[in-house]
Amino acid sequence: MLKPWECKVFGTACTPEMPIGTCMVSSEGACAAYYNFGRFSRQRVREVSIEASRA
Ligand code: SF4
Image (cartoon, rainbow, N blue to C red; front, top):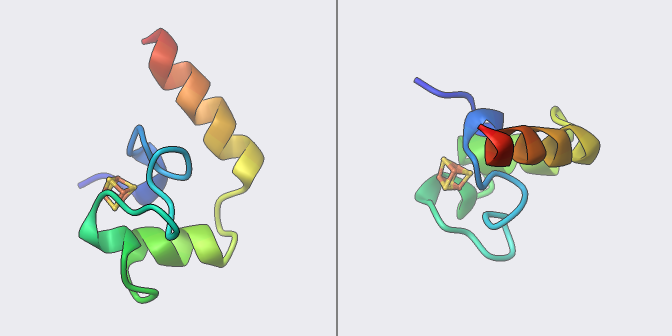
């Protein structure tokens, strides 16, 4: 099981405004909750995305 921030598109291609998966659609979805309530900083999302693109 992955945490929301471990998804390669979390906070980049997949956001509550433009969801890709169902977890980002509902405000009660795990990914939307992490995104909306700031448990994961936007800066860290960018860092993880860069790391994933290099892998
Ligand atoms: S809802 Fe979006 S961020 Fe969450 S696992 Fe699915 S594609 Fe990834």
